[in-house]
Image (cartoon, rainbow over all chains, first blue to last red; front, side):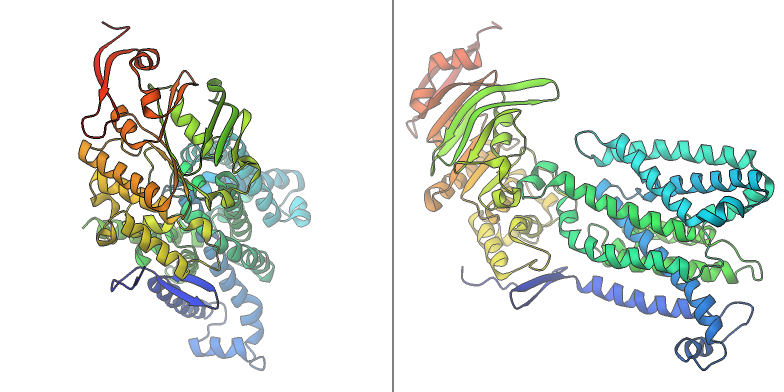
Amino acid sequence: MTTTTRTRTRASVPLRAAGLSWRVRPRGVAVTVGGLLALALLMALNMRLGDLPLGLADVVRATFDPSVPEHFVVMELRLPRALTGALVGAALALSGAIIQSIARNPLASPEILGVTTGASVTVVAGVVMSGSAYGGVSGLFSALGIPALALLGGLAGAAIVYALAWRRGLDGYRLVLVGIGVAAVFTNVKYWLLTVGDVNDTGRAMVWISGSLNGRGWEHVVPVGLALAVLVPLTLIGTRSLDALRYGDDTVTALGVRVNPARALMLLAAVLLAAVATASAGPIAFVALASPQIALRVVRCAQPPLLSSAVTGAVLATGADLIARTAFSPIELPVGVVTAVLGAPYLIHLIWRARK
Amino acid sequence: MRLQAAGVTLGYGDRVVVDGLDLGIEAGTVTTIIGPNGCGKSTLLRALGRLLKPRGGEVLLDGRRIDGMPTREVAKVLGVLPQAPTAPEGLTVADLVARGRHPHQTWYRQWSSDDESAVALALELTGLTDLAERPLDELSGGQRQRAWISMALAQGTDLLLLDEPTTFLDLAHQVEVLELVRNLHQEAGRTIVMVLHDLNLAARYADRLVAMRGGRVVAAGGPHEVLTEELMREVFELDAKVIADPVAGTPMVVPIRPLSRP
């Protein structure tokens, strides 16, 4: 071998130092950095809103300067809400990116893993049942809390789908089919519960199952933040296996990847991310489905890029919340309503453009 | 013995395809497995490449149980090209070949200069250097098959299992692929095991033929010992004449008529 230098433009460039080496996509880095800047701006714009309107400059000053009178409001109410939105969006998008890669299907999302639907049906059941027994949502919930219930429901839903889809290994196609079936059952049970429940309880439940960031505090930020802090590095390490899993099972095995453990571990990470996110903000629609597909097209790669997808999800959720709060002010829509309205046209636009 | 099947029983679901089979692969040889459809030759190859776990018996790689070895360590010694492999959409030849480096990489060493030179060498050996940036779907069948072999080469193993590497190729491309296999064997001393359908090409390009029927090895040895008129009747149920290949001198099968269906 003499020389391997070729003057070609590649989607990724090697980065080498001290025996370590990485492949870096310049476009992926640009999208991630640009996305983070946009996210910071959207979060600041969001934090202007509330009973005490603030300007953009006031928000920035109040965030970093404890002597400003608005510091308390910003730090205790507005920042946690904005952070919850961003982190939940990132977690859902990352979860969606992993699931879409493994299912080899752009229409796969945490819904088909039973996570969001499992969480919804459990929360609705909890609200409706404790409501009639205790004369309000205070009873059972003061002890257990909606987030804990949602987390349990989400994990249980995923366990059911997993158990039904497993047949000497996990096949993406079978997983999607089983997931759709289970989601349909959960959704119908949820509607049945909503019809039989007390009007006041079901109204409250409806807001939660649309996905809402209203009144979210640090107690909602911390679980999602912790989940992301642990799972983002782990999933990034797993990216290589995820890439390899796009090939046929025999090819991947021949390359020294343990197919079933690799797939199961990545799916577990996706389930945990979606369950924790849903527990914090309810099942915000469309973020997990659209963000990976948007990121994939903007970064121009073959498979949803994990980090860029997460940033896209954070931007999408935060932008949607901004619209939810301002579009029909003073009425505030649940963020989940807006994510669907906002995400769908953009995704359609991207698919349309790719056809040309 | 590089690779050995010791009393392996193989199957899918409730069906047993291979029952208690023994086979040894010598270092530095080209072994070709032949046999009628459904005789278990691909199944055997998958088991030799640890893609299928035996229900009974064991596969030994350099004397060690292949099941007991970390699959990644196996991938550094043994390359497998499965039958009709599938690649994700939109891949370039260079992407595919680079994937062969997977067992040598970790998350903190994703693309070393070793990887780069191994890929360049694999592309060169398969004559694909100029096509490296072409999308895989734009290649001809022969070029695509060469790209897959190139990926297996980039893996840097001296033991290669190829499952029907010439399927769907026209005769010229079949010969092209098999010439490549022969070069890999002669120049780099690689040990190669493959499954082929074309008996005449199998005889020409193999040191050793293994004929299978009904999950058993019926005959194994040099092409002249194995490819006889009796074997054609016994294994393929074919009345045939076996003459000397006018070019290579290896046995050549000229079919007359099937035995069972006159």
